[in-house]
Length: 300
Image 1 (spheres, rainbow, N blue to C red):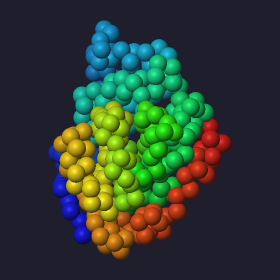
Image 2 (image 1 turned 45 degrees about the vertical axis):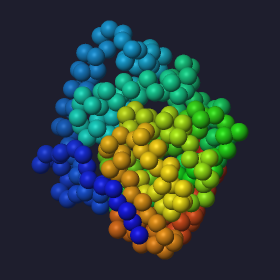
Image 3 (image 1 turned 60 degrees about the vertical axis):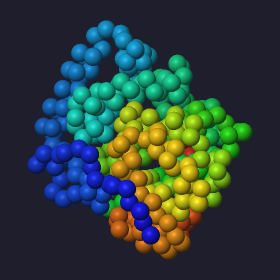
């Protein structure tokens, strides 16, 4: 059984968009070299205008401009344009918020290092290894979007801080965004809270993490599929929704019942068994530790 709040896109795309809405009723800009060139120029112009003088809203970006100019590439700016479906002002706002949040989450030094396991994430090994948020490597939905798997039952706050777990989640989301289709069309999150205890539904963590996803990291959350929520979720979810933007609330779907019921529900969104972790009856075995080791060897 599936309970769908609403998954229609909140933005209106002109005729310069993909022909058909996707499984979530969302349409996406049809990218052309002209669109990219024009909006990048507008982005640069507005960013310059909004950073002429140092203010509380731009000071972290100005620090990044001084400390890590090599990270401030046009390709990185394009990710923000894509995340805001080429609304330039919104993209610049997200970009400035990104650097503010990055300093808040990583600190004044690590924030300006590359987001790699041996640099900005060098002190977050424990939080990374638990696999609170994992990437299904090489697996995408029909639109080519990366799929993330969230399992709150892995949490053990005695071993790491909430900020460390947030940094680990930043890393995994940025890894998902290495897939260009995820920049263009968003990412899918499959959540499995079925084994989580009441204490592992951490509202304080959500208050740190959700603003990063909703208005800082250049990611579009196409859908969050909550699978097999426990009975006490009816008490917890209203509190978590207080931390969600209206747009994110509309992209949450609940799937109840057995694994077979969940798989049947997910198929309505083009997510078949080959795209679902074994924890929910799917075919995908996520070797999170091996994935991290491979990325470390690659300098990622």
